[in-house]
Image (cartoon, rainbow, N blue to C red; front, side, top):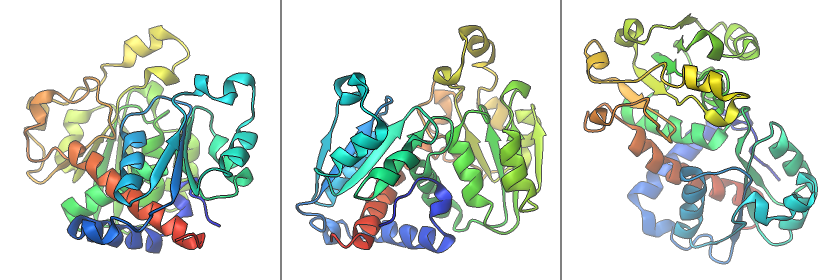
Length: 307
């Protein structure tokens, strides 16, 4: 039985398969409308979520399945001190597959090791967020038609941004990828990601604090918010939260076919005036997340032999 904890649990061949399934779902939704009849997805979200949780639930409903969930961590037995391992074991008795978000890095791996059904990491602390990355990849594929020969700018919180870490891991496996890492000095990409992923794979990258000076060379601009919930003190958050705000003025030197992505939620790092720009892809990205989660649920249930 396979679980997905990190994006590297999915090979490039797996990613290609998920993308092709997603494209077929888009073109032929009725073909998939009852494929998960009688199956149950459990959503265990120990952190707030809108897109990830609702897209997982919409995905299962559109496959004909059902969803069981807890409304919050405070309403679960975690509030009584139950371990993640025990929670995963118990929920396995009620569901065919689990999607779990947790504030602690590594919690998803502990849960998967104790669950009796496939488990999908829906984000664990500042570690990784593999299904957001599948949404990112489908968006890139639909916009660019490829994953190689791209210059990708990652802007904002690169230190705590689990979506950034997962996307780097995913794209590092393709040819002629170049990263431009745009962040305040305090929120630079962690050294272990640079060492274990970028330098290990001989992937060129540059670090800068200058968004406007870098934007002209980018094929993709991946904006992120500065995450209040990851900071240990409010003062540092307030000092850094408005480091980068993308406006029409800052796009004047960008390529005409630039793709602007953002995992959402947006606070104010992308001006609403950008929403009508044809280069804005972040709402498409949210929809693509549903399709890729549908494809992933199907893949894991098929591998588990339950559909």
